[in-house]
Length: 151
Figure 1 (spheres, one colour):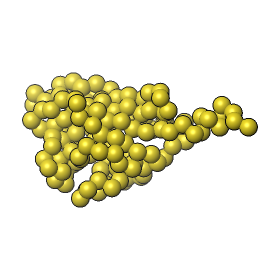
Figure 2: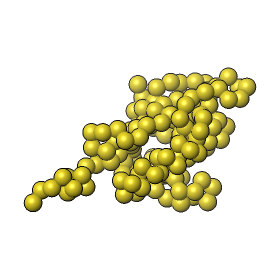
Figure 3: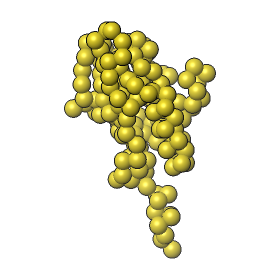
């Protein structure tokens, strides 16, 4: 018998990162978590500028990658992108400034200038990461995919 509960388990949960703004040192974007056709979470992102996918100094290329929840001694439980060409340890984690990024993706609730460098930063990063983790935990998802696009 086909029930609504079985249908809900069949719905796919996935991440979508939409990069929307380039700055000299960084890229700004929006991260969405989709469960089926519904947006169940959204936040702002901060990444390093594109520098030919060079490790520790560039954002990752556009594309679709497997992503898994893993424990990191530095960041606690964080989502890690897998199968990024010539890269490893690319995580979604907390942080406020592009200077804190080594090729990863930071999350927060707002792009805002916090310091004196004239570049937009992220606000409430740890709280945003915790909220994201709670939603994924409630959905019982620890592996999925992330699609990264630029507009």
